Image: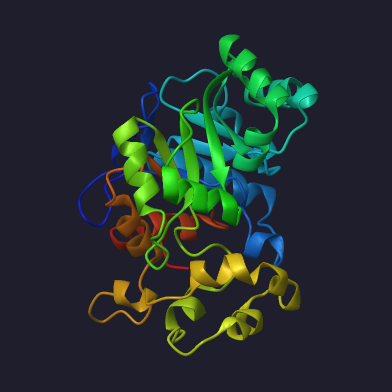
Length: 305
């Protein structure tokens, strides 16, 4: 697998996922292939297939699953491969059903193990039966690494304060150009040999990228998020989470002559943190994928989104 060179002349860097033997590209493909979390629809199955194949061609080797799009993963990418990895978001599973969930995905992927199993931090910490079940699945070789999802506020605060849990392999955390308060946890993870996956590197899927970048967040309050979000009024219930992730000086990422910086600028900024193993980025088209990787700037067939 030879990755395509990106704008800076560098291929997607390979990084270890903590102390595991997983060697991940610095960007992975998020599992939700949709615009604004499906509010404005999902791309057709054939486009999803093209996204997966183009991602592999570009050298991406971490594919996130658990959102339903994995049924569109092309057969060419399934089966044993020491250089291709799949993560599974199980979220908050019942301990008694976890093995069935894992087995179903293994059958679809034609694999013997899930490379990275992702569980919500608070669920893992509160459920001893689940912790024991995960340990059994790892012992049986069905799960290679455990990653805790730090999405809820309490889980984020715990990570920033004391870093990763000792009996896990890594965490999925929120971190981007305008939301940096997880840096202490990321640094503790690096020092303790734990992997770090990143979500919301582009501020999430709540707002249009161009509108998010052009907004003057020094004066824009939470009501602006409600007005700009394709979700509309229902986003109000999540503003405590959303506002700090989207509000900030994104425009500083633009290069001279750019009105709106390419999404690759924001992703590259996150990747500069040496504690980051890989950045999970969801896209809704091949063009968005090529912009995110930076190949859009050197490929005549690629366009921005």
